[in-house]
Image (cartoon, rainbow, N blue to C red; front, side):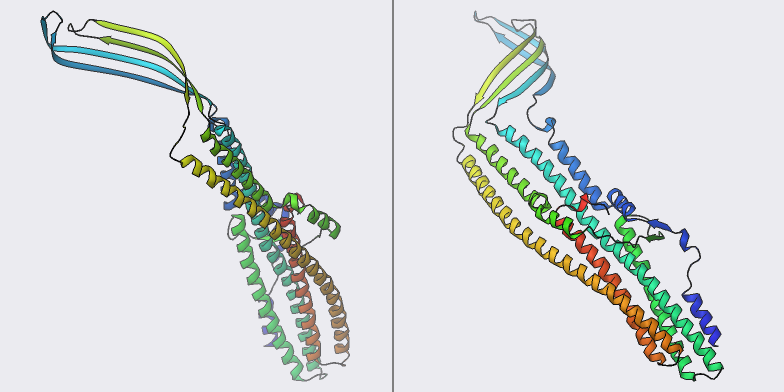
Length: 439
């Protein structure tokens, strides 16, 4: 019965023989996939493309407009014409035909600099869309690594649980032999069997959590849901000196600050464009036309055909529009003032966020270092306890407690490692350096 129980546990927690054949999804590969496939990033890139079209010369208003017109008319009328000498002429079914075609050119020479500032505003909107796309990419990368590190943590936890299970299985084997040779009682065997059952359950739960986390990662990557892979569990920190340098340069790289500055520029150009309402508009017109007509006998002309060029210059000055222009300018000025206030507010908030993130990063890094030392201590304690257990100096309960302490130390260290790395990435995002470092 005991051998059958061990066999069942071995089947449940057995290691797949083809594990080495699984695809290694490196951090760089995951970043490449998410940049190419993630829905939010694709939409952000499309928004940038729209903004790029809007800032082009074709949408600037600086180019002339050229239109073509053509028309034809045909009339059939009964006409009675009375001439100056009193004579009359009556024509029934008098036919009149008219044809025309023209090319018309319109060009605004000067509109009070409105279109110039609109053009600059569209350029800033394009720059803003790039910053918004960058923010989307940074947010998505943080989401990616949050899930990626969870997969890595659960992967390492699985190895710890396997090791714990293996140690408990060895303990059960020793207890069985000791019981068979009369060196221990049945209680040691029963305790080992219970512990082995608990360890196998923990391992099964850990594996299920790992599979769920992998599916979460495939959703972020927008790839096949049941894709099977392993991840890179190595973590390298960039160092405090480099982080401090990034923090000192955060004012010029933080994405929120850059967006707020662009919004301030946009509001400024919007105000200047609205002020153009106080200046005149000068336009140039030109056309080339053809007209031809065929008239009934009641007219002076039997037919008429004209072709020619025409050109002109126009000036329009809206001296008073009922106050709408003045109101628009006042509101634009208020909007600019509000945007400047928002910029100052964001500067204060960013400084606070960076200070908090830097403090959290240093704290988590220190916790990770302490937990690494704790793992060494727990490992030494378990090895010593195992030797004493073999010599009969401690009970299986005491050995189990040392084993649990080691398990907790290892899993806590894994959690602290990835929390510290994620804190580092969050700090890099706030300092505007997330896309400038190697993952």
